[in-house]
Image (cartoon, rainbow, N blue to C red; front, side):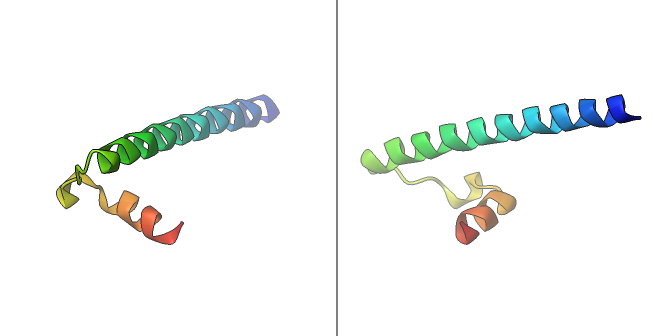
Length: 56
């Protein structure tokens, strides 16, 4: 059971790192778009992402 929990914790850590990497990448892309005066279509932003952006 302990080994299973450790494996799950490792997997959760990896997924957390992946989410962070995606977030970092999207943030960079948004900054480049804004610098080029390109605005995203609001329909391109998932509701959960919009909620996160509003609460940061």
